[in-house]
Length: 113
Image (cartoon, rainbow, N blue to C red):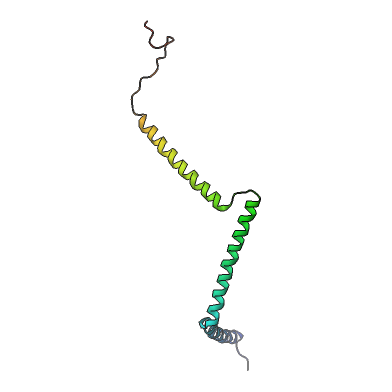
C-alpha cells in the first residue's frame, strides 16, 4: 500500500512538535530550570565585572585612559562647547549696538585739520 510521503512527513513533523512542546514546556516550568538560568545569568554578570576590572587595571598600568575617563572628558567638552555657544550668542546680540568706527584717513584721531 503506497502512501503519500508528504502526508507522512507532515504527520511525523506534527507529532514531533507536540512531543517537543510537551517536554520543553514541562522543563521550562520546573524549579531546576529557573535556578540554572539564574545561576547562568549571575555567572555572566560576574564575568563581565571581572573583565571590566581587569581591563581598567591593564589600562592604568599602561598609563592609558579608561572608558570612564573618556566619558568624563566627553562630558567636560560638552559643557565647554555649551559655554562657548552662550558666549557667541551674547557677542552676536551685542553687535546690534552702534559704536564709533575708526576713520579711514591718514591723520591720527584728535588731530584738527
